[in-house]
Image 1 (cartoon, helix red, strand yellow):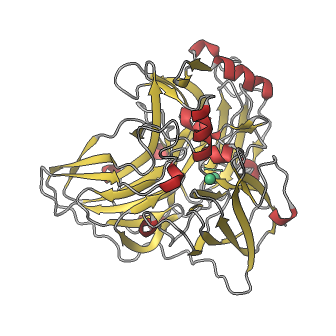
Image 2 (spheres, protein in one colour):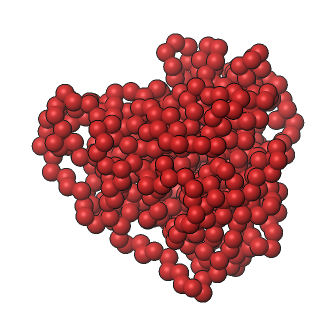
Image 3 (cartoon, helix red, strand yellow):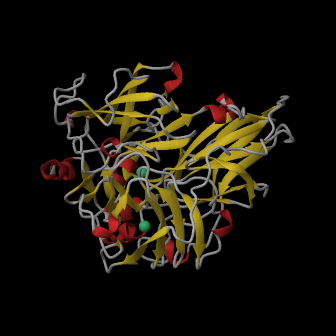
Length: 519
Ligand code: C2O
Ligand code: CU
Ligand code: CU
């Protein structure tokens, strides 16, 4: 594993004086012959052994070169997939983007996926937000080596929602999540169910999927991540911010729309950037869903805060819009304070808290559409009941001089689990994160969706009104000095899971731990 990594660092990343590392990968470099087919290393299916699968697919993590900016294509790492079995709409390719195919699953389906690692280093595929067995969760303890294939199986148990998949590799030298996701190893996964289908929300062309990321380029459209200099140290400390925004893998664009309602589903797939979603004409943002699917009812917010890894489902009604007019979805400016490293060395062209456009919607057509926003949305899943006797487990987030951040004084230690990181299968607990740092941390817990029970003491208010805490979540933004309580229930699966900060540079620097669900 280490050997591959050092080979990788010399050959894949080339130092370019003063501009950091370019992600330049020569196509001839692939280590082993990844010349197709499931490799011999396949040894049964992890997670779920079933006679019958409803969906079966090949998923390749592979180097590629795709157009991102005008001019030369960029070298990326990306997912490609082939549907071997299953309904026709299961995969939608994003051919002109490095984004992996969007995978559409239905609750109750049994899914089998052959993951082929065609990269020159270890990788894993994590199904962010899904309630799946520990062994198929794509954790760093089960790396897929270059040239290897791992086959996993799981049943789709989650309610309808927007999930995503990405790399979760972490080697001896530290995490590779930041690098691999940045290189392009990210895709959307949509779960559908009957409850949601019954609401008749806008679909097809009237459902917009937006993946928000930021990237920095240098040379001939080469992606730049962290270099070895002082700037990189600051980037690691704050999290990497690109100097331009990409939406679905390309610069923000104009989209033609009609006078009708739209469902806009947004993933923050950035390494570290927080977005403050707002409409250019000042209309409220109508939030209908979050990480774990639809909220009980729609909520109007002046703006909506979207931290790394989080998803939001937004209703936009353009029925009254003037044909010819344009409405922009923007990320509005906010006070990042210390968190963006503003005024510090290596100052970024697009600091955290900058204002920019994400998509321009040009009303090009008048139509008669009948969809109304449902007054009641996702009511079927009841909140996790908690009381004064529910066990509270506390986690303190603290800074360590030059070494990033710790959780209860600890960094990532592989699959080592401390005594206070063991929970009982079937138990309900309140996890309380206390942020004793000057930065916000998007804390993520694997394998489940939780409810936010409360927040106290947050110091920053320029994002506060946009924090969506109702409904179900797998990632919560904990503001500087704030304490946040989450209700969670450890159901169905025992074994090892992870919790971590989803600022990928924080995570890679060790702000991540395993916890164990014991039966
Ligand atoms: Cu998006 Cu540990 O995950
Ligand atoms: Cu996750
Ligand atoms: Cu963090």
